Image 1 (cartoon, rainbow, N blue to C red):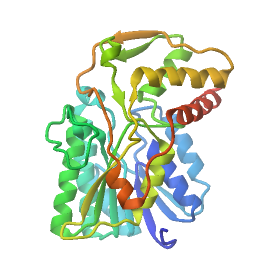
Image 2 (cartoon, rainbow, N blue to C red):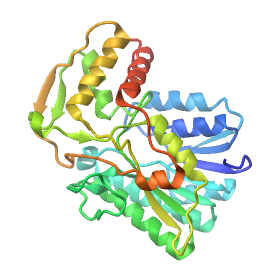
Image 3 (spheres, rainbow, N blue to C red):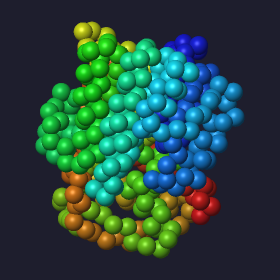
Length: 336
């Protein structure tokens, strides 16, 4: 259990994972300081709605700032002196990194550097930070294990996440900062990111447009994805907060994935079924098949053994359960 007098700072608090994590921590009676720059990478209204649900909590304080501003970051640490830092702020998206590389360097490289520098100058009990399954690149061995080589990223986004892991390792070595990296595998659920494929499929369906599937139109070469429901991600994070790494270099990395990869076409059929049940009528997406996009990988598949051994937890939610909850939320939120 997290000690109630601990101050927990969450970056990216208006983001998908940040919001759900802050809500859970606040419900448990913890003090949460949330940071977010509220950028317009996707619909700011959704970020505002997430934030609005957090504001009534007496133990919540929000700072609107950008972690790419080093002085502002140091000032926030100086003022609040957090005990635990959970760094989730980042410029997300693989394909977007092909068009806007500068934002990835500013947020994911400079921003992470500013956070870990702040942890150096204002020591914390534990730094947890978001990495990504993207670091595994085109690795052929599955499931992906934390001990696998991750030296061949295929997108700038993946390269920035790999660099975060290297920087965290170095700072843990030099300054004994206890740090835990979390390689998330395709997180989904209600109030999720509109730039994610499943969310986009719903948008296209209700707009009367076809969905685009990037697998060359070959079902035998169907993409495999390890879809992980948001509640499982949050449970893993909560349990890891008190699981502080030690040793000569107090830095550790965990996969957080479902360990049950799904074929993308099966996932789409399940999503159609979820909307069919929610709407009370048959839903079938119009589909257009295209070449796989640069930066995309054919499979993501997490080994979760290391996580299970550490915190006795393994994600449990099936895609049927998770997508049913997403469909119900989507229809209600957008008044479909």
